[in-house]
Amino acid sequence: MFPSDLVSLLRGTPKLVALTGAGVSQESGLRTFRDSHPSPGSGQAGLWAQYKPTELASPEAFARDPKLVWDWYAWRREAVKGVRPNPGHYALVEIEKRAPQFILITQNVDNLHRFAGSQNVLELHGNIQRVRCADCYTFTETWDDDTETVPRCKECGGLLRPDVVWFGEALPRAQLEAAVEASRSCDVFFSIGTSGVVQPAASLAFAAHNRGAVVVEINAEPTPLTPKAEYVFEGKSGEILPQLVRAVWG
Ligand code: BV8
Ligand code: ZN
Image 1: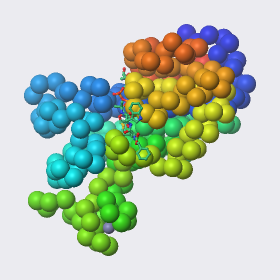
Image 2: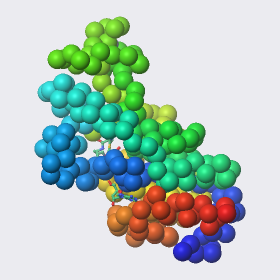
Image 3: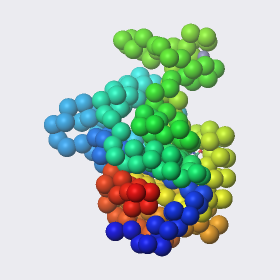
């Protein structure tokens, strides 16, 4: 399944970077952004089907209807609580243990990489488990959810919001700079379960490619990156990644 030159390359302790997207959590039962249109009759999910994620995940939407956006994230938080990491997440934990130089960059806000045990994770788009004040940025672990309105900040009375990056908002500077640096200096760049549409995350693989890194794509369908990738494995990351770990690190 895995070309011997890729296996020997990976055994050669190269600098490894992996970028993940919603596809890596699909086998855990979380919808990707693409297939956020649930099957008929799937209850609550149906409620959110009428909204495009890019519409709800924006400061404009929060300004327009903060309760709607708060409830959408509350629903997603519950959805995440109801699932577990899948073999794809655990395989990336194994790679972190076996490969001396490995950095995991994720677009996912579902916290499943950390839940699986990944340590070296750069969360480019934040984390749905964290909540902070929209005004004074104070983080809080507790908030009363049974209010008709959006819970408020105990410091300044501002509205609370999920600590995620909305469309049109800047990514966290430290994480983005570390991700760009890692992508530009890696030997092998894995792109896993991402459609490669959202910027600037989607530009990282091309930055790595332009610096001579070997690009490996693991995705259920072709993406704009596919033509640039030296190795393409079309399929489920939860099946392919454990096989790769076994093939390389036995
Ligand atoms: C910004 C957090 C400016 C919130 C998210 C340049 C060109 C064009 C547009 C732009 C541009 N630069 C900026 C933009 C605008 C925008 C953007 O990229 N728009 C897109 C839609 C064109 N970018 C932004 O707004 C960014 N901010 O630019 O700010 C700025 C700069 C400085 C100062 C001030 C302002 C912010 C982007 C981040 C937005 N937040 N998430 C939340 O989650 O609610 S993005 C969100 O959507 C995810 O985090 C992820 O990044 C993206 C979804 O993409 P994927 O993860 O790839 O998921 P998708 O469903 O699309 O694909 C899944 C793939 O997996 C599929 O290919 C499928 O086949 C595959 N798959 C499925 N199952 C499996 C599988 N593969 C393997 N195994 C399986 N089992
Ligand atoms: Zn506040």
